[in-house]
Each structure stands twice: as C-alpha cells, then as structure tokens.
Length: 453
Ligand code: F6P
Picture 1 (tube, protein in one colour):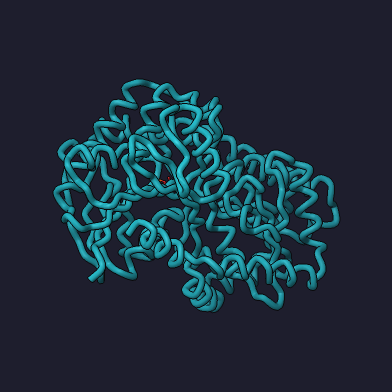
Picture 2 (cartoon, helix red, strand yellow):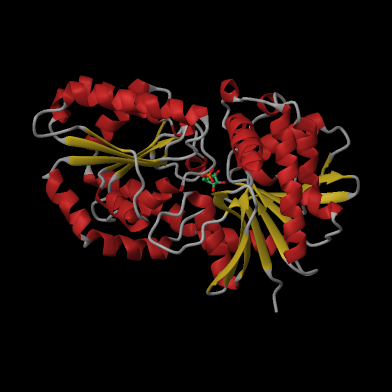
C-alpha cells in the first residue's frame, strides 16, 4: 500500500456546495487527494477567540480544519503573509508593510500548525506543504522529531535576489526551505531565482545534481507547472453552455463580441491597467464601440487588507469613468462584476468569450488562462491575450503575449484579436490546447508526489 498523503495549506476549501473554490491551490490539492485519498489540514476561514477544530470526510479525503485567533489572523495572515510576503514575491516592494510583530505571529502560527500536523501524522505519511504562508512549517515539524518525507510547493512567483533581500528576515526565511526534501516551483524562472538567491545569501550551500546541498542534506528543487482538470472542464463546459444563465447571456450579447477577464480582486492581477487599456481601445477604435462587451469578474478577496480596499476603490472609479463615457441608453461596454460565481458559470462565461483577457502584473501560474483554452470550441475558438508576466506564459507561447503595463500594446492586441482570421485562431488554439492537455492537474500532483516518495 502506498503511504498516506497529508497536505497542509493555509486555507482549506471543503467542497460542499457550488461555491467557487478560490484559486489554483485548492483545485490542485483536491486533485492530488482525489486519486489516492489522504488528509488536508488548514484554516477553515473563521476567526474566533477560542480556536475550534473540525474533522469531516468526503469520499477518500479527510479534512481537519481549525479557526484562527484574531491575533493570528491579523499578524500571520493579514500581516506577514499578505502585507509582506505577497507584495514582496509579486515584485511590489512599495506595498510591503513590514512589522517585526507580523514575523513573530507568522512563526508562532507555523509552530501551532506543525504541532497539529505532528499529532495527525504517522511515521510513513508523506507530508506536502503548500505556499508562502507555511515556509517555516517544515523546520518546525523537524524540530518536533518528524522524519517523514517533506515536500513544499510555492504557488506564487519567487522573486529575484535583489527583491527578496529587501525583507529583513530573508536569511532566516531562506534557511527554512532546507528542512524539506523536495521544493517545487511553477516555472523555470522561479526555480532559477530561488537557486540564485540561495547561492548569494547562504555561502555554505552548494549546487547538487538536482538541487542544493546544505550541511550534508540534499534538497531536490524542481519545476512542476500546475495544470487544470482538463476532461472535467470539457464536460462542465458542455453542461454550462446549455444552462439558462449562459443562454441568457448569449441572447443578451446579440452578436456582440465578448471579452472576458476572471480574477480575484487583487492588485497583482493588473485590473486597473486592463481597464485603462480597454478605455484606450474604445477611444481609438470607434468601429468596435458598438460591437464589444468587456465583462470582468473580480471576486472579492482579502478585503481586510488596506491595499485591497484601495484597488477596489480605484476600479470602482475607473469602471464608472469608462461607462460614463461610452455607455448608451441601451448598452454598457464594461460589465464589472465585483462578486463571485459558481465554477460552472465561470466556465460558461469563458466558453462564450471571443477573447480571454488575462493580464496580471505578476502571477505564479494563472489557471484561468488554461481554463479559457480548454473551454473553447476548437472549430471556432476565441483568442487568449495573456500577460508575459504570468507563469502560464512559459507554456502558452501561442497566446497573444502582452506586457500588462503597456496600455497601448494591450489595446492593440484587443484590436488584433478581434480581427484575427479563423485559420489563425484555430492554429493558435490547437497549439495552446496541446500544452494544456499535456500536463494536467492530475499529472502535476502525481509527478510531485512521485518525486517526493
Ligand atoms: O494562489 C495563491 C493563494 O494565496 C493561495 O494560497 C490561496 O488559497 C488563494 O491564493 C486565495 O487566497 P486567500 O486564501 O488569501 O483568500
């Protein structure tokens, strides 16, 4: 019998309703656990003075979730994870709000999580830790005496040395990585940034054949680009296309072209620049004003972080400005949907779209880009406009790759995509679809676990 897999991440999404599962991390972890079964430990999203722990089971997956105290929520989650590491790793040094107490809360929470995991783990379990919230967790587990195979996967980008060293705790943080046996990154660029950073900051570390050697311990370092659940998405798309809601949207479009973006409402997603590019596009292309609709879904996220409130205000302003300028009594060019939708509905939106406009300023992978590709009709596919600063661009080279800061460039790409011949659309889509199919989320999970085992 193969060993049990224990997955640890900050947030656990117990799939109990049609509510959207937020982000690639949750989709990936569920895929990893669906096959072989196992246990998923993490936060249930609640904040309570007295911590409560819940256990539940769904098919082969056992969920163990806990709440956070107000102090941990503020210092560990909002503070160090989302006001220090998130902006730092997304190259937004000006948004880093460093406080030493945030780092202390981050370490304290990792100790608590490690204690919980140590109680749950048996000697031969494989333990797979996910994302920037939990970098120190491996070391804390080792300190508690666990000798299990320990893996770590970073879902977000790893910054270059010069950015990473701006955080006062850079050396300590980096050393924590060496408690793991396997470290995975989304792209070659992230892996290379990590290796370069380590070699510059930790002089005792040597480059090994597949990773790094530190004090006689070899840590394997690999690239595992997360994928999508291709076959299920294809099935869900067919169902979604027949749903009342998607038919309503189709009727409502009345032949106009649909441009779609789907993101968490996060400053890393480049939504303000995207709105400006759309504004610019409408200004320059009078011929398109009548025949396009841009629908941006922006799922509210981390709204207790001030920088997220600021980006929300900015987008409200820009959306009002664009619609104020171009709306007619019977049509609104920008549909800004500041809310979440079920996964099937999102897939339906993507399937109906002529253009997927995915232009993050920096992104670990961006699975919406891959989902857009999978949702297209191969005989009459839409065009993917993708930021070259998204991890997905390392694989999806046949998209129209843009620099999200280049407002003119994105506006031109929109015009080009709308005029693209069917032959070119089919050819580009065929190449993209091959990429997306070639390494699915199941392959990603299997591959990482096999390397760890
Ligand atoms: O993919 C990055 C990530 O931070 C995940 O770790 C997380 O599950 C997701 O985005 C959603 O973020 P949050 O848990 O802060 O709402």
